[in-house]
Amino acid sequence: MKYSWIALSACLIFWGCGQNSSKQSSDFASLEQPATPESLESGGEPPQGSENLEVKPELIQKKVIKDGRINIKVSELEVTKIRVDSLVARHQAYYSNESLSNSDYESTYNLQIRIPSLNFEKFIEELESGEGEVMFKNIDARDVTEEFIDLETRLANKRDYLKKYNDLLKQAKSVKDILEIEEKSRVIEEEIESAEGRLKYLSNLVAFSTLDLSITKEKGYTYRARNKNDFGERLKYSLSSGWFGFVDFLLFLLKLWPFWILLALMIPLWKRFRAWRKSRRNRTS
Image (cartoon, rainbow, N blue to C red; front, side, top):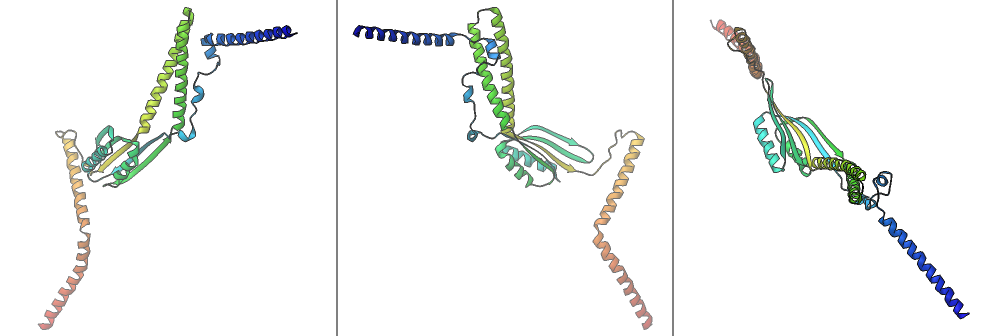
């Protein structure tokens, strides 16, 4: 009886060891079996580490793009331009575009300024506190945080998939599999470059705000003859000069309106004084 229990126990131990070894061998086989391009494209498990791509709400940093458009009318164009130059240097900004336009009616500086986003509001505040009248102002702020997170998540996933394809390429045996994997890798590499370019572009817009500034100085209209040797052009120039000279003379007379009022009050008094003197002479004679 004692030997039968020992034999039964030995059989149970050998049976359990066989089950464990078969399970370990099947797990090892599943790990050793390489993935294929079809398994990656047909909805297989996502790459390892993708479950860690979730961004905690308290760690999200807002990504805001700020830009603005301002038009200022000034009386001294060059003085104002020098002041804007000093503001650009002080706030570590730079001109991305600068142009000057001249017409018979006005002169305008059109300036596109890239300003560090942290200095954007301070730059506008100091600009408006200077000489000139603000004729137009528009400030926009766009929140692109969601687009940033989406691009970064997609980019991380694509890099993981590209690593998987590179591992598959090392294990590929046939020419067909090699060509197929290389084509898939090429497509993913192009998508990664596109996402990286978009992220770089958005990062630049977030880091540096854009201000389109126009500084305008109005001036009196002056006729300019296209060909001074032509009699018709010279005649039009003479008529234009005479007319504007006449207008300037009228404006000069209007500037003296207090003296005209004083003169209008003094004329009746002078007439009365002369009449009084004349009547006095008549009485004495």
